[in-house]
Length: 92
Image 1 (cartoon, rainbow, N blue to C red):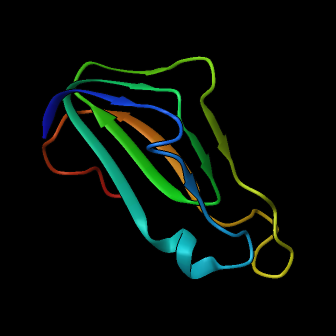
Image 2 (cartoon, helix red, strand yellow):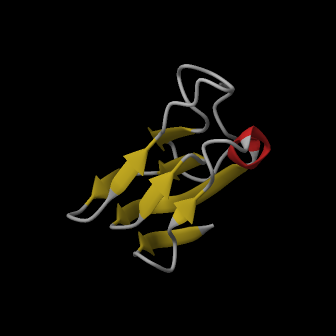
Image 3 (cartoon, rainbow, N blue to C red):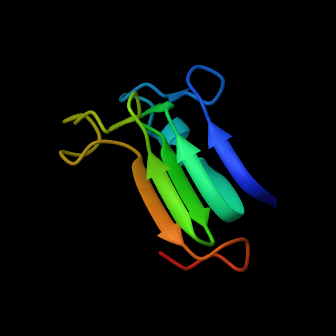
């Protein structure tokens, strides 16, 4: 687990097809003891940001869940940010 994490487009962009629910079910966790700063883009992915002090979304950051009537009206994937550091993850 890092002390400060910077997620920048396009190195940390996460795009999945809204029609592939298996891709969206794979969880991606970004964990930091102190801070996360993000300018990356997330679409139809299941992503968790968790930092001990702060999570900052800077210009350019996007999190999009595209509705897919084929699988779920709510779309595929999810995005969540938590304060809590690198300890055990909070159950969803």
